[in-house]
Image (cartoon, rainbow, N blue to C red):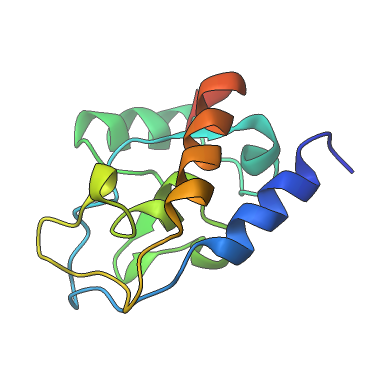
Length: 117
């Protein structure tokens, strides 16, 4: 178990889910994730990562959407649930994330080493 595993698990349980606009991938650009989160994702080749970055998209974005949806990083889960990361299409959960939890997540982002997905 990694040092931040419990914290990541807690944050995941607190971020509300919602339905996106079908076919939309506006939040699927290059993102940063903690090394713990990266360890849960399949490794992509350097060529695949560079091609995705050149297209300003995530290397895990496939033809039918996110190929790692259940293991997607916190920042991907947070998109659309807080005014700081609002969905440009107006999609959002019935109730937004608790502002105190969102603040904890943003603090985690600030204090934890993150790498480009």
